[in-house]
Image (tube, rainbow, N blue to C red; front, side, top):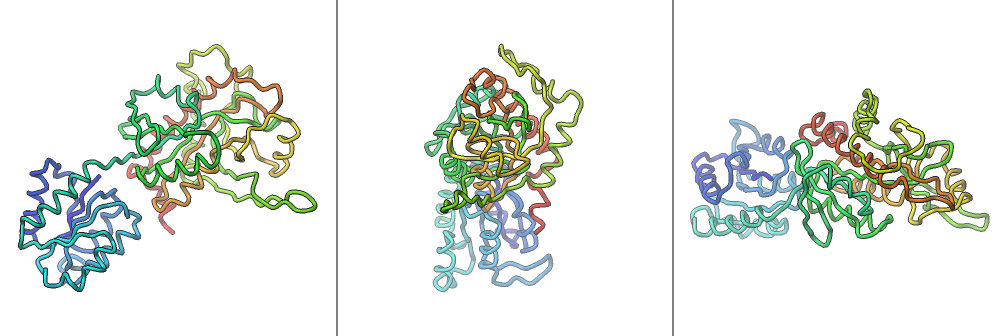
Length: 391
């Protein structure tokens, strides 16, 4: 995470920089901004600490004016509300009338003319910055069985943060983590995903695992990545039955295009299967499918209920208990990370379903997500899908 030093006085900026470097912070971690235009551009980075000057020009060679409040508003609009803020100013006489506005944003006011005070305040924030954890991606798994393939595929370190069990990993040089949900289901997925996205601030959120499929639309052992998802339980019960009102969440166009191009590569399924050492695979090999998911809170093991759910949408392919919640948490997040979800069909929701395909399904969906993460950060090197932020 970076430190944004917003200061147009070169001597003052260098003094603050030297103090930061003395605390073991690398100069490459400091982003220097001398005017509001540079601040606006710099906000695309993940900033953990803002050091603000009260007066700043709007553009290069411009005249410095009171701009602190504008900077605070820009930070809020960028969604970086978890960052620490300190305003180090050479005009302490202005503090009384400014204190309320700055402190309401959690911004500390410090007098530059008294080094003992601003250095002490800054030191406290630098210590806090070092304790903050940020991950570039998060992979969610609802079951330990779904997470198990990652243990053999990636080097990992296990950690527990804010009550969630994580496996920290690196994929394609990007630092991320695999989060295990406390239980299956929409509620657990939504609450856990919202918490993790807020605390870890990822650019990409993923989910892998196993799911049910609809007979005639998908095959056993077929991997499906979600191009759209809805919850089949939303609606209204009336005298004439249940009237569904499904809310749909679609994949971002550019991310979906990237995934479709990836799965169209030669022998892609063989690449996913490579390394799998389990005893049981699907009797029929089916290519990876871009498909529609529907999510609900209950496990279904009855043909009639599967047929009822299938009737809601004539093109729905797969059914699970978490993807809608994960995508909804992403959609409601101020940070708006990208989202990729993929699961393997291991049953058709019938009474005679078994768990023979679970290891295979978990393995190829994990391999798919690893490949997708690698591709995502190649195509979107800054972790930002431009299409999304153009509105």
